[in-house]
Image (cartoon, rainbow, N blue to C red):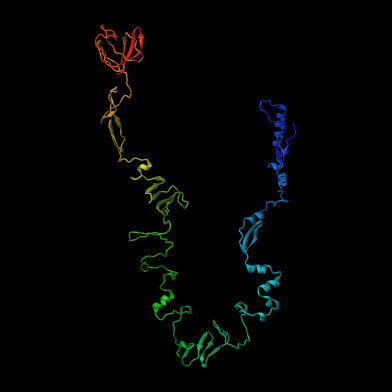
Length: 492
């Protein structure tokens, strides 16, 4: 075999002497060598300069192309694939949710000020806890207040030099009788066992600033200047009607037990989301309205093997739906579908026939009829099978035309037809069109030439010699039939 085809810049070119020359014989040796070279080249790896990889395996091809995995490019990694699919944004960080699975979460600027701290002391400093964290002393607290949970439940031997305010009750202990003086010694309260007593005297008057808010008489009767608010255990009212209103006693939404009698529900009511009843619902009105997006009413039949049905409205369509397999939902085709926009309806998937859609469905109503036109008899409406009978036509001749009557019709022949002469007279001068006669002639007629001939003196021949009366019509020669005899045919 010849040497491999030479390349110039990675492109093959045929060796000299291998191309054919006009009007010369192709030599088998250089031609076969060229074919062998082309075969060898087709089976060899195509170099990169010719658009190939210079390799016969995937790994060598990647190396030649500078795509060696682990050297030139990163091998596929599930973790990197997961990260590549994330959507990042400002103030968010990546974290793992499982092996090779990543997600993002918020990372605020403040959180970053903690993450960049080198140790716990730096974190405390960032959080403003440096002083107390270092000393462990409450004296280093420079602002704010201590939460109740951080105070002890009991303290003894404490002296308060300023005002002490209590937002809740004050427990003086259950083992001793306690006395609380209000402005004067003779006016105050004392606790004896489980009884709260007030010090007798005249009336106890309570003020808020300069305004009187309550009064306890010497007999113990309590009078409030302002009605005690509901939040304080009162009614916030000085009469029963206002008290019921303030307590919500006249608001049905506050009722948590029992049922309302019919008399307490009247007019429009839209507070029911689910209504269950073991009996029937009746109305004395003439309409029940169900409103909402695609409203429907379900009819659930509890009998064995019974179907459930829905009455369903969706946009411009009304449906009757059926659950035929007790799956809890309806199936198709729907039992009924009515389209109010197109005035088209379907019954179990088949279009309902109406007076307006006979033609569209290719259906003919019984009210229509077939009328027998000219030349026909029969017909009638389509409530039964009808027969149209064609009237008996007349004979077709060269003189008949296209015409119709109420019971029959005729046709034009469309061409001139030869007619058969049925006469028996030897002196006949009128013959039908197409009739042929043998005629003796004195001058030879041309083919298809016209010729006038006569009855001969005997009763057997026709001749062109004038000898009697001429035969009527136009006759043409259709050829010679023998010595001095022509075949003539009547054409008009």
